[in-house]
Amino acid sequence: MKKKESAEILSQEEISKDIYSLVLKVSFAKDVKAGQFVSLFERDASHLMPRPISVCETDPEKGTIRLVYRVVGQGTDAFSKMKAHHHVDVLGPLGNGFPIEKMAGKRVLLMGGGIGIPPVLSCAEAFQRLPEHEQPSEVTFAVGYRTNDMYLYEDLQKQAPVVVSTDDGSFGTHGTVIDAVRANKIRADVIFACGPRPMLRGIKNFAEDREMECYISMEEHMACGVGVCLGCITKTVDVDDHSRVKNARVCKDGPIFNAEEVDLT
Amino acid sequence: MSGKEPNLAVNVAGVTFKNPVFTSSGTFGFGEEYSEFIDLTRLGAITGKGITMEPVYGNPTPRVTEVPSGMLNCIGLQGPGVEYFCRHDLPFMREQGCGVIVNVWGRTDEEYLETIDRLSDEEGIDILEVNISCPNVKSGGLAVGTDPKRIEEITRACRDHAKQPIMMKLTPNVTSISDAAKAAEAGGADAISLINSLTGMKIDVEKQAFVLSNKTGGMSGPAIRPLAVRMVYQAAQAVRIPIVGMGGIMTASDALEFILAGATAVSVGFANFVNPYAAIEIIDGIRDYLVRHDIDDINELIGAVK
Image (cartoon, rainbow over all chains, first blue to last red):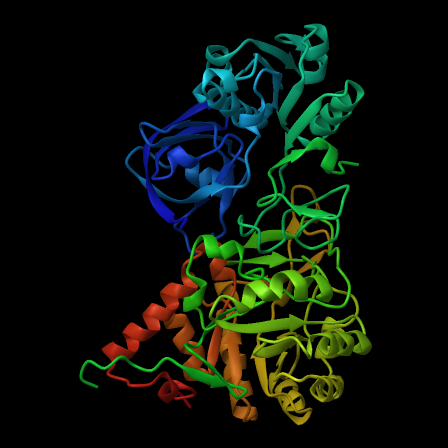
């Protein structure tokens, strides 16, 4: 059975303005699939709800997970103030994860925008842990930042070739992450993507035009994080298996969806 | 008491439940998701997500947001419709070895009754909980639940149609909970449950906009607990039928407050989101309390504080 546990913080650092990297010792590191998330909890009776945060890296041997998150509100602000040896309550792993094991021999393009970069970083790492015959033939990152303040860039480079776009043109391709893919003439069979909704919409269209498989990580306000409250739904093209409407649960049926299945209009 | 296990079993509407701790509608699905975390067999009962005749989309997102010591939701009763529920979810619920409470609602009186009719021949339903208090749908819900005359009317109609005991779920968004409770009793309710969520609102000051898609949402969580305890107490003073009390119960001590105020059983909702083991810890905590206070039977505590 899955457990909520009190996890020791091994390290925490601010790797860019308002972007934090948190390493936790957890019992379930070996079970985490790339693209899954965990719920973190504050120990403050006025802020009880879980905060879903994607896993950026896992180390099954050491039993650790790394979370890279942006401070966006009161909850993430509280987490950012926690230090090594503090404990934080964590529930996970939650959600479905990317179809890592179905990419044998394929060229995979990992696309991340802003704070959507950490989950795609975890994909490259997961590919490397597969037996050689199950690995993709090629892995490339295409990542988009606002400016040349490029958190995780070195971590990405350690895993695979990286192309970059920036909103202000201060590094790489001036424009969107799709512009960077075009400018660098990247060819791929499959896209895994995580980022803001307009980016995902663009990537879905891009993949459709080129008849590529495409999996995207969706984000929505969550409450339970486990699929019971129906707070975090996303519109789907077909009738969902849970409520028989066209609303999939981001936390349980996702957060990773085949882009063809979700309606991003 | 000398080492004997205290009795936790309670009787609600003629049905015996192994303990007085249920889960609240809309916070527990139909049980399947939480079976990854807890042994559902241990629960007094699972109350399913509200269902009606047809599948329901619910409201757009954002549907949930945090408020101090609680949350607001405007899910809007998304759900699969009674046919799919009977084929897919009810079989799961009745296999769990705990009580089964099916929550129903309708946009019109006819839809309440049709849904109840459809369920009348289904086996393994201990109680039908009739939601006349959802703050997030335009028709049905609150329009019925805030008018004692309409409460009595719909309760009577449901009672006439249902083959199972019926428990009317009352809204706190009324001036007099006693009048609402009396109306349900007069209409023939076998039990009542309260409170549903309180209508609330949150505004994003930076964006100068409503946080929730529906502008308002139902507030739940420990922030509403004192209000819920007061209402359960008032309802218990007003009626003789059993009460299932709920509203921000997080711990065994919280649950006991409701029982002392007059609830025969309690229901755990928001707490599941914070701690999937909450209901189990509450059952264990009530048992420990009884042992510590040398009380043989939980029933001795129901309404013990006058």
